[in-house]
Image (cartoon, rainbow, N blue to C red; front, side, top):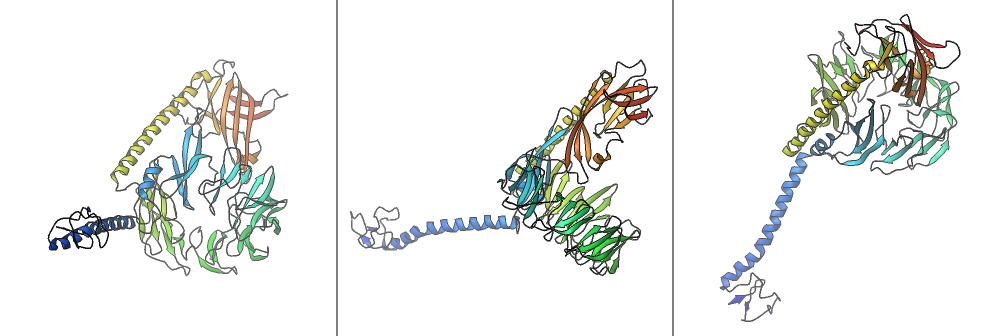
Length: 578
């Protein structure tokens, strides 16, 4: 006898469908059984579905709960970051959810070029390493945008790599308060976040700076001034100042060429020009130096607190203070009272509730992070802790970068065994690559130092050969051939009586060639007070060695236009040549 698996009524033999509910009679749960079996059939028909749904729910809750527990309140993955960062030669801190990553490539002459891109907090490479950078590059995203270079021009991209502007700018500042300043074809413009050029500037901008409280620093014929977002000069160009010229709490510190003081956004002198140095206001106070003593003033210029350190100012209501023996540091509140127990061998200002501190261990400093109660949220155990941003501190172990969170967990101690093996393998590969590169550089320097670089046209026992210092790329070493002790004379290029303007930037010898007693070398670098003027020049000079005097003489010029002259003085050979 058969019963319907859904409603339970008895079915006649040969019936294909239940006459009451229409359920097919060939349902796997329709069986020949007693009436009591109908109840069991109905239960059996529902129980597997309930069980299945319950199992799915339990699995989802367990899995989701595990993920929540593992990344409680976090928008990052240490496992993902651990797998990612080992693939790069250098890594930066996070800004706008993106960290720059760099890949190096060595050049045949011992130099180095690098390309950079960006990763997110899960370790995904969002923007591949395709942009050109150097030591002067600001890699960070600001207000969701970053200026990037293709090696010739600058453009702006968003955090997903979309180009907001084409590569048309010769220079570009960071965005701030919705605006940036750019240079194109020797003209300067203010642009907005859509890349629209709003106005052409009449003044030369401090391109490394940014808008602060609606104003931007510019240079005029008489000095430093400030423009507004319309390009109008609101503060005359008559001041000077150090880099980092920003308005803070309505005031900015500037110099009259002799002393520092503070002006407001109309250019009115609010605090007299009586200080030898003056920092921006923060938490209502500013650190100033007068007569070789540091102290804090309020916005009226009143001295409110003395300090024993060249302090950086108050942040989050706390400031760094140095002990009377000047060996340790601690934190004080705005009354000058010690904020919490704890002394450190190195200490930095608070930012967003956290500060980096260091403790000495033998001859080394180990760094960590504390909160405003003095609790070490990241233990002082890292030799290199670069910065803390968006909940992650950038750390470095040997040549490998990583991150540590505010729970003290890092990319170097992940629990996932697969990730751990990958990180260890990549670190091993980096060490092997480093050794190979060091050996290659050693052989290159050894080859450079061979006697075939000597000037054969000079008299016996009087000729000279040269080499470039492996670390100081702006220095060439002149070796007297008759000096058996391996001592040298060093010459820096360009020589000192070249325009000293270049020395405000940096320079390096990118290549050189020796032909008989003539040297041809190319130098490149950046120049100017703002270090914003790239340059590259080739020099050709004759080298004369006369009774131990080395003369560099302008090539093919009438008379003896001596650029540099130096008698060979024995100094320690940095290359330890035998």
